[in-house]
Length: 67
Image (cartoon, rainbow, N blue to C red; front, top):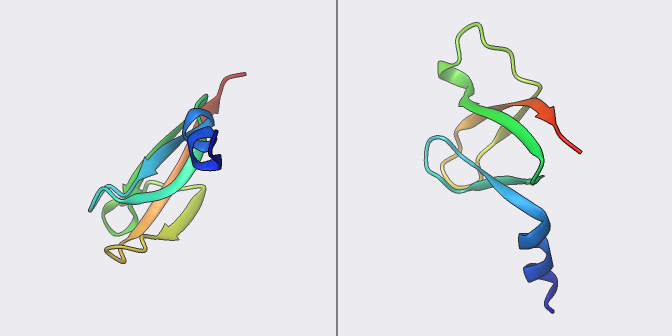
């Protein structure tokens, strides 16, 4: 089995809300909220990153994780 196939079984993609490209991978049991940082208003993210594809600033908030 290829390494990339194993990663697809373990992780899920977190996508950019602007262009839909993959920002990061997350565990399947982790739930998160993703918004564009410029339009988020008073919303506070846990993490901020920049989309490699469209260069939009994206905020990520981890909601919960189930084991």
